[in-house]
Image (tube, rainbow, N blue to C red; front, side):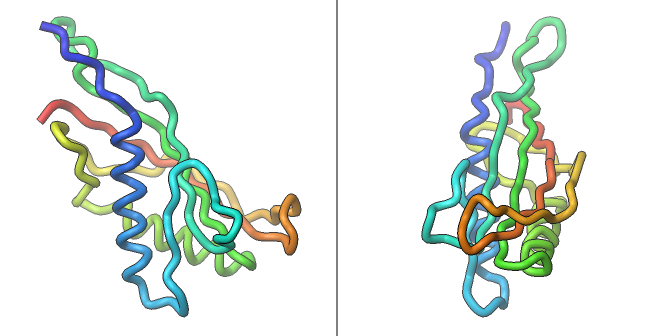
Length: 142
C-alpha cells in the first residue's frame, strides 16, 4: 500500500513554532519571534523560516512514505553581531535530539547542511544584517 504523500507545510510550521517558543524564552533585552516565509515590516529583529516542497521517498512498496525538506533559516539583526548571535541561538534550538513535533509523523533530529556569513541588507532603511543557514528535516509515518 502506498502512503499518502506527506505535506511540507506542517513541517515548516512545527519548526517555526519550536523556534518562536525557544527564542522568546531566551534572556535578551526583548524577545524575538520566528516567522514563516516573511519578515513583518515592523519586526526588525527576528528569524524567518522558508521551506521547500520536500522530496518524497520510501521503500518499493511505499514510495511516498518519507519526506525530507530543506529549510532556510534567516536570522535578522540590526548589526552583524546581533544577526550572528540569533543564528547561533537557532542552531542551538534546532540541532538537538528533540526534533519538532508534526502530527502523525516521526521526525528525525534536524541537521545543518549549509551556512552563509552575515551580510548587510540595504533594501530596507535603516539597513539590517542577515545570517542564513540551511537545515534538513526528515520524517516518516508515526
